[in-house]
Image (cartoon, rainbow, N blue to C red; front, side, top):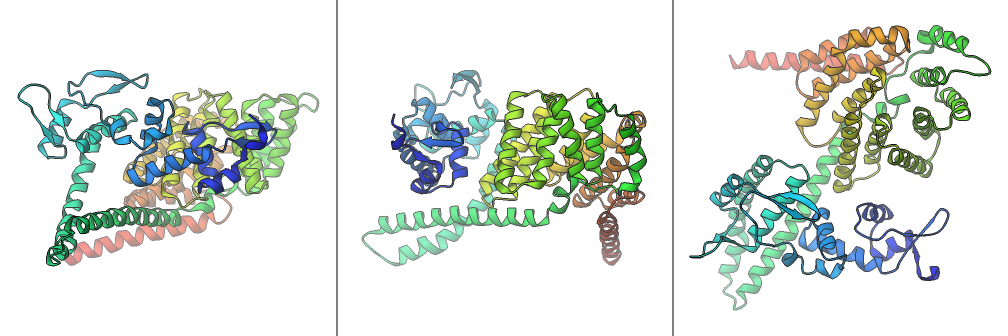
Length: 502
């Protein structure tokens, strides 16, 4: 293949009508071939990727296929993209209602249990006929729904949650249909046209297009509101929390520096000093100590992670992208290093700031949760590192889109840290003696914020009040006081309303 026939990612994106980010995502998900590396720092693509990307986008837009289904169809048809045109047939094998396990895509796919299938039939969400001899025969739409549910279940969705979703949606659809009968259908009946079928089809297509666009618009509005309510000032602050006044930990830092051996400094002490200076917001000095570790032990994983993480404060957008790629490579090469996964998970949350695409927002949130799940699976023995992962997870969960479950789990994670306070204080008495001065005000404030968002204002005030006792750089105290006043005000308002009801 001659390289002069290949195209750069920017050219491919322009021809296909997508963004370079979309192309990279499609490559990552195995939807289009990987680029040809012509030379360093340049990735070139075959021109036929244009038609492949268009086929994927058409399947998404006109057939409303999720990417997981598109990939499945491509895998089943040896990446013949024409198969997406005949996707109805590709998605509709006759379901096996026996509730047994079958082989598909080289994996075990759990078939829908009989009880779940019975509910779908009872509520008439799937249509079927029963010949005198043989199995039930489901309609095209029914078969597709069963198949999609099975795939969603394979990816972690519970059968009960899927049924509850349909139950909620049905009441909304019923109201929509009633309005449709009074408007489109009623209008068409009044106009006794010979081309009634064409008019009815136009009406249905108009409603379909309107529903899809309305869903997209309102989803974007919900997520935009969610992003505005998130407090990114703390996500962007030094080491993701309230920084300490230097004088509060100067003695501990100076003592650690005096213990360093000039010629053969201890790597652990250098890393601890980097953490100390980051807690004060002095990232430049933290990087200076990490640079010393890199010269002595270039393969030290903690140093490599923190070096990448701290440097992001001093680079532009393109530099941050390169650093994130370095973090992704580090995690890929060291999949069991939990701390690296936690930092990468946080990075995906930062990426949410840069997009308003609802699907991309949820994808990034999913990637974040995936990394934290892997981090917890490989949880380190060191109680300090384990607590850092737990703290980061608590912070992330309280700001994720997706409902009350994340917020409840955030509170549980904070409570898990607080339940170990005595053990942690004993650990920090001999290791990182300055760290509790950073950890506890952050835990108290953000747990208070999580309680406040959950409507548990009495508990929120308790956490805020405990955080108020610590000395931390502004705007910590302003936020603490604002949190206490807000929860107290809501409590007072609720009490007045109850009094009025009497």
